[in-house]
Length: 55
Image 1 (cartoon, rainbow, N blue to C red):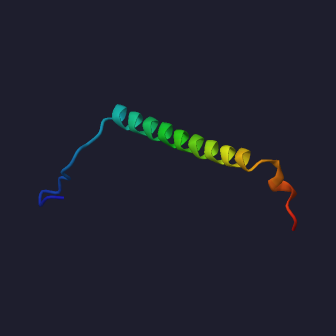
Image 2 (image 1 turned 180 degrees about the horizontal axis):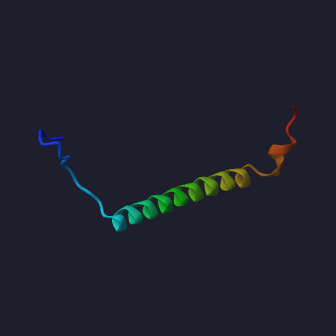
């Protein structure tokens, strides 16, 4: 804040905030899908023998 009590900086409109939120959700979903894809590919590459290992 400056001495007048007015906060400096960028103030986003409601539309910009909505778009930022939508973009963040889309990035989170894409990242989650990528993690799930890597997990599935890893399990497939290990094969069914990984479940029949001796304890």
